[in-house]
Length: 283
Image 1 (spheres, rainbow, N blue to C red):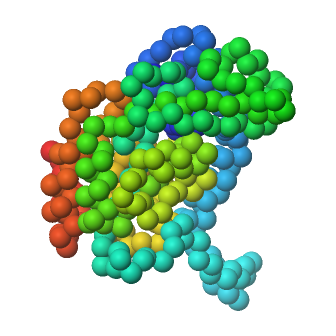
Image 2 (cartoon, rainbow, N blue to C red):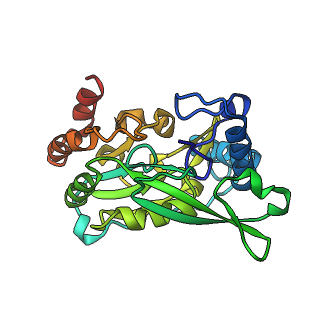
């Protein structure tokens, strides 16, 4: 199934090589053309990289002391991505959970057994796009947008996983996908209100060709924060906080989410989060 930039991360390497599905190779010229169209519509890589690199630079640099030569006075501003902890989550650890290839797999290619079908309207510059190049898309009457159907498969045991995670932790959805796709997917996926907050591509830092989830910007104690993600590039700033999970596409015999529940039940009671995470990562 095809992964497009509205759904998955985009790297510079992908711009130079044939379409890859996180490790799987496809050499279809039509698929490459479709991916290029979507990248043109959804991504502003130059601006994203500049903004991301600047954000990374700001995160690593410290301002000069007031009164020193060439110093600049800066007023501290709260730029935390998450709101204050709700009363119901007081004392709980925070778990950041990825969406695509972690909880679901999505494609623009029709899938007979899709759990959800999400319509996504694409705006801007569509007069430059030949509609026949985009299979399954419909040109809107105003000629200024396209309507795409996104077919979503749920990973096995995602319901049990999210229900239990919502009971044990302050859960946050953090995806590199665009909100126009990911938000309606989360509406249908999260029946129990497990996600206390949702963060999308604009909350990521574009760093070395990848959308990175900078956990230090969340406003939570890193000693009590965990990220579940199939892409190591997503948590490259904080690898010690990660619970890696294998990428999922369509294997209905997969049990990774179910197998993680006992681990997280233990983690919710553990004081030394990093010790338990290190044990899990070394397996």
